[in-house]
Image (cartoon, rainbow over all chains, first blue to last red; front, side, top):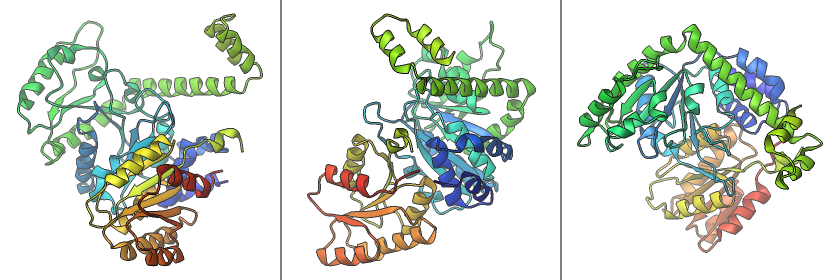
Length: 305
Length: 138
């Protein structure tokens, strides 16, 4: 069994294999991880957590590559967690985000880790935020979290990341798409990527027009909309400026409290599920629900009670 | 260890070392291993041994599988083994597949390539081999 405190010390001292093995222990919820968590979070250096999300094929990976290049130019050490979906049938996964990251392969100041979503539906894996804490302890800043290709409602990333970048493409659809609830609502920064395609400017204008009319109970400012072409790097420096500038906003006392509250809620849900799974009455209660002798809510109540 | 630990997915890096541009086989294998329940990280084409070792290190994989059809296997594969072992990845299973003459298979095994899968090998055979020989997590 791996010595987790030793791995944390190694990771914090810049040993990449130690960091990699610590990330594995986090993903696997290895024995002893629970005891390590206070030290792990204490070891954090305050890295900027940036979520990159958007539909499949919108260019998230290519944009992450371009962003990494720009941050490296500015002397920052970049950590990347790239999440891809696990098969609901076999648990297997194919993670291909490294394909777009080749030019950083030999760069010691870039650390990229692929994570399978392992059954989570929110677009990231359950362990993602703890993995981010490990990259933080290892001195990477910013830390980019690339979600699975997201549809309209995988908004979990926005609760975890300090700055959420939603990546769309010019062909994203008409103006009604832009006013639907969900993914676009959670953007701190909205990017129209593939800006060299016809209609890109128009798409950005449509988005700007529709999102700027927010009112009612919405207190958020409409997100800045930026045009990028990740393959050429056009617009990427401006996006990095915008992400960096957003960090101060994300650290307002109110936002810090919101994220803290969400993290505790997440931990509660996981803890509840874990306790319930080893409850002596689990089998019996599940059977009762299956046979409709008991409702699922009451079963859950007895399992955590 | 609990039952849970035994069902943790095996992480496999599938890489294409060198300059050959044919990755249909690598992709079919990646897909097949996914269906066998493995977590597969695919690096894409034209990887140097350094890039492969780097990816294996950061991803902390249990298995490195390299597909090579170019004939440059004797130049590239032993170097990957050397780099991985040099960085402390002592327990990572390193295997190869593709077009590799029998005479070279023995030489590759002598330098630490665990197994060489030639044309006609089924995905089930490869998955079974990885399951049997990949390190156990604890």
